[in-house]
Image (cartoon, rainbow, N blue to C red):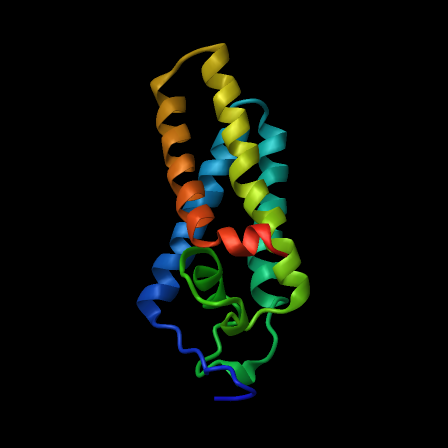
Length: 152
């Protein structure tokens, strides 16, 4: 325990499946943007991947002293998105904490809006399945992290 914070240890299972879930969520959002224009999907993918994996993951680290095993930020991402870990135990800096609501909106609201509009324009089962998958990811993360999303 350092400075009142517990040292974090990230299991390989949580590291792999948490990062995989985030990657799938990014791909779902990219697919939703692709419905309108391919260039927008490429821009969305590049922006979100940079924001999540570089800014929140790698650059968001406070100190390696708070982790038992260094995962170069990839262990924190599943904690940040999918667990009820307190803000103090996240081992993430202020800049990354301020970027998280923006990243959440970019991952959920933008693709949900594109998918909803595409369903209104022309109904397709593909778009409905995409909307349901995006809603599940967004609601699950939103419920877990509502305090962090609302209270910067």
